Image 1: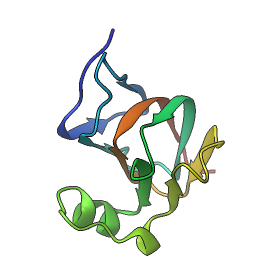
Image 2: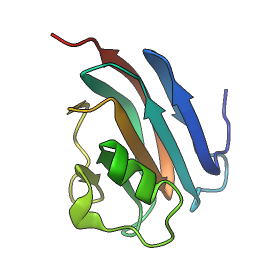
Image 3: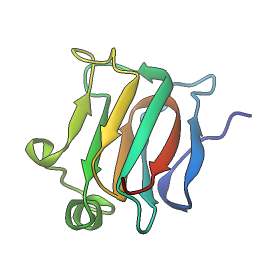
Length: 122
């Protein structure tokens, strides 16, 4: 199902799916998902679909509760603080291992589908 996304969505548990597909008009919006899985050692993201609309479109992934809290509603994003940035120059990434139980995913201008799984401590 196609669902235009906007704003911040809070996700919890041990696994889930994020779907933000473009409609007939390419999205230029800003969508954010904060994934929190208490007492887990890491969160793995598997990206199955990524469409970036233009040179200013990007996906930013922030890892750790302090960065996730700071940037979940920030107007100004600090790219150097991001764990990973995907853009028109670097988009061929399908798996991301985030070494935290608190991850923020930001999509600016495009479509994204991913599944996430929180791994228990070793």
